[in-house]
Image (cartoon, rainbow, N blue to C red; front, side):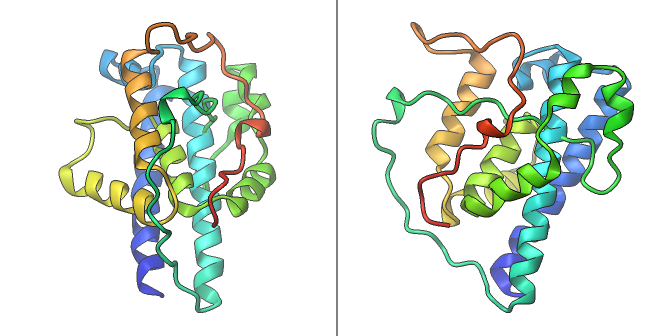
Length: 210
């Protein structure tokens, strides 16, 4: 297993475990105030949808990394770019999640909340993941799983930040989305809608090279 891919795969596995635990908590209708704050909503359907989408992203990224490793190619660090006019950009639309890449049963949840039937398919998500830098996908997974300060130990946070920065993601964009999720939009910025739009269009390819 190439070294960089091995490290990122271990991180992705941790994120999957984290997301599966969250999905189980939400299915038990046990959304504590702190969890609702991390997602910016107490709507169980929205929270579970985002977790499901995040787990599908993680499963697709895991598969992509295994394919790359089987070819003997390691991940190469991407050039670090400073954000340009970040404050003027609109935030990426909230992406939806999945119960678990290997053990998910979306049908059971779809019977509870019909919005989950509008999640992008695994094939759509896999296609989007192939077009985007690994670091950008990891940032999206963390956003979908509602990851926030205080949930993870320092070593886990450092792994996430390093992977986002080294492999083509934008740490500044990730932190900006985290701030908006926890504290709401900036003054004058439109508030996030009450119901997210679950569509593959939310997975706009990042313009950076893969």
